[in-house]
Image (tube, rainbow, N blue to C red; front, side):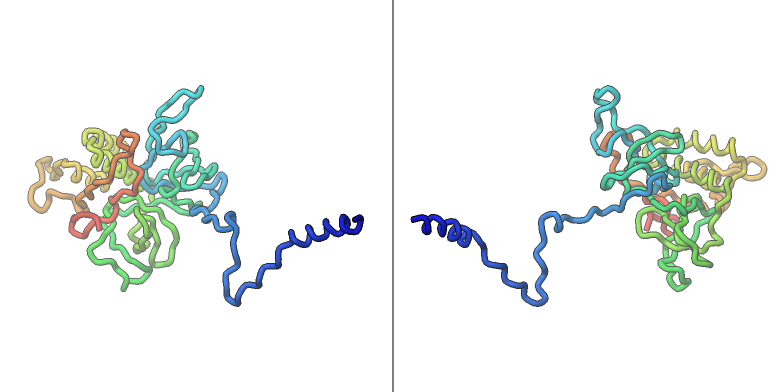
Length: 292
């Protein structure tokens, strides 16, 4: 009886052991756990305190959400949208959370932006073009893109140089190439291009009077700036001849004037006229057609 009691635990232990798994066939993929099969996040971690550039008019939000209202100070519901940042504005990266980045604006205001609307490149710079400029698919003259030009006054984010070309972020991906000598990085030209960007956005949003106020501000701060003549033509301003009479015929439009692109994107879901999608402004058909 004692021998039987001693053998019983050994039999139970032997029955509980599982046979070893069969070796995998040559070339077969190794099994993966649920954690290992999790899809990697589409965005890399942000560079803390790094600089990034806004690539399209975007809502700066209290929280990383598209909700119109979120908990505010004291936990009370508050509007999620804080303000609107325009293309070409520089922000400081603070942290990332999926498709959202917490940033600090030039006015030291913190908030959240979609990372898809940011160029996270410390070394990028801002430039513009004073006249319509040809677009190239590659840094080669043979790669010119017929029928497409960069509109005068476009805000361009220069990604890299490969003389005689420069690669620029001109709006929706992919980036394009331009001849570097067409770019202007002068403070006055870039400043007036930013005013053009703001006024064009207001015009597309149905705020023509506010757009004309921006034009008036530009004429006061930068008298004689050629890009403001382009903007004035787009906003319906009648060009004046040297003697003060309205220009007619071929002199009616200033050189380089480009018809503004139509913008049929959806308004921001918060209902404040903010757009979180890239704007089809800078790529215009040669001769003043719709964007390419």
